[in-house]
Image 1 (cartoon, rainbow, N blue to C red):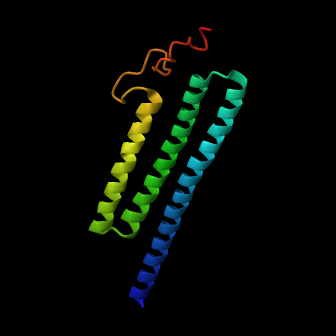
Image 2: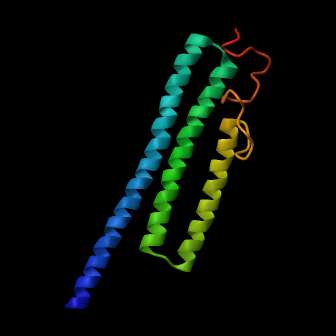
Image 3: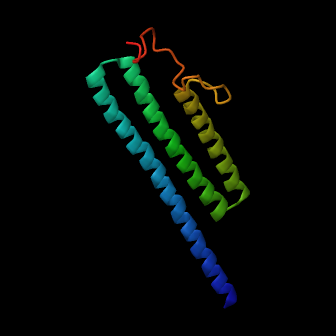
Length: 142
């Protein structure tokens, strides 16, 4: 009887962990989808108003990139929770490691794209984007 209770409790804990992992998966996908939708709507409004395509497009890419970064973080958290807490076998941990490496590379690439610099490089004095706007003056200069 005692062994059955422990097994039952362990199964309940695993089910809760699985639900938490699935909830984080859903949250990650929703963050990416909603963030991309919001960035697209903002892009449309800015484009109609400003018609400064390079600047508007750059801001759009940054908005989508931020949504993807946050969504990837949630998806990695979900994978870690499910893999390590529910079924920590060498195979599942190996698969998790590959997933984390791929998602980390994507996150790193997006971060570099958004900030225009490598993470270990100092940020510019103004704290803004360091990439040129293709010969056009910055909004504050024009």
